[in-house]
Length: 210
Length: 210
DNA sequence: AAATGTGAAGTTGTTCACAGCT
DNA sequence: AGCTGTGAACAACTTCACATTT
Image (tube, rainbow over all chains, first blue to last red; front, top):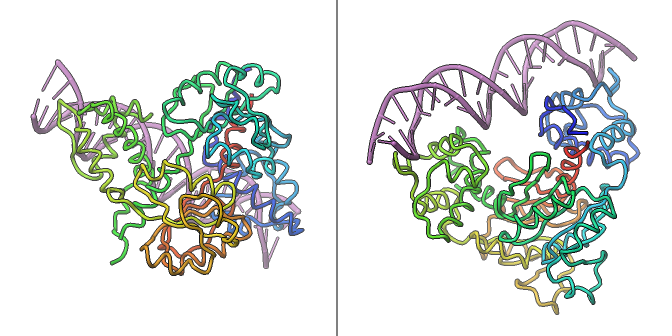
């Protein structure tokens, strides 16, 4: 069973789907049942045509003259993203950032559960009150297998990152959210998303120059 | 003195410039003086032609038959990004994530210094050993003016985000790194970069579906 | 010989304009 | 009348092919 072949769909479309989802959730919280592409696009920060084009990659979900059903659209997006059921995730590297992410609630709310964390010096964390168990690195294969984990968050130093990635991949991880500032080399069926805060700041810095 | 008009340069090029910078720094640490577009592109995870095209938006920096001088290229990129001198930054929202970022060393290394942080309940942090002073929100204008701060990191809850952004902008902030999961509305001369960890995970989730 | 710099071709993603439902 | 769905035009970005320099 290989990757599904849907290469026609732009990556950015998938990204925006998540943005739409956030907006729909807020609409639902306000008891709004129906929304036009114009209104939804507005809060999502895109053009209405783009929203409609994005959605039609997956089918027809709107009612002409009326708009989209908030509930129904929410469902179709979570289904598509694969977050309609809670997904287990592990985190590697319990430093400053890693610790913060362990306590971050945003993940749970969006369908992800950090089931365990790993660190070279797992013993150091025994006493601290952290919301998940911390294991040493050699427990990676077992924990990942036991919980059927497919995704990992890597908050390790740059020098360790490639090796950690290799370990994760051989343990069966196929999606990595990488905070280390290096380009990871992984098999092509493994997906990596990079988050690099220094790069984001540098970008801002460039664009605000006067 | 308004924004410089260089709209011909793709945004993605600016982003990659930061990536190249990271790679160049590692080369320099290994005492490598000269690098070909092929080698640099390889570690940066792009095609050599793309690297060369990116650089030529800003001039000619290579030597044909030889490659690029690591030191010189580093200098030209930091200069361009405006990070050749340390830039002051403030952080708003000293929760889990905010606290982690205050202790994160990556920023200092790349030319940014968090000079102060703000929180609704600044008093709570008086005793904790944090590397920067924490002020209540009403001190925003003064601190920003005193330190000539132009960029801010926002790690506040979604409900507070727009109001905080408004305050920052009126205090003179022109670049915002926003972690709150909403689309901020700001004047067009203010630049916002969004970091949304839940969205990144959702993206991964989509692409690893089998 | 080796590697850069670059116009032109190709590819991908966005927006328009309007046909088609409800 | 109002709003979605979509082929076609457009714009942005990437890659190619090769001329040019050391």
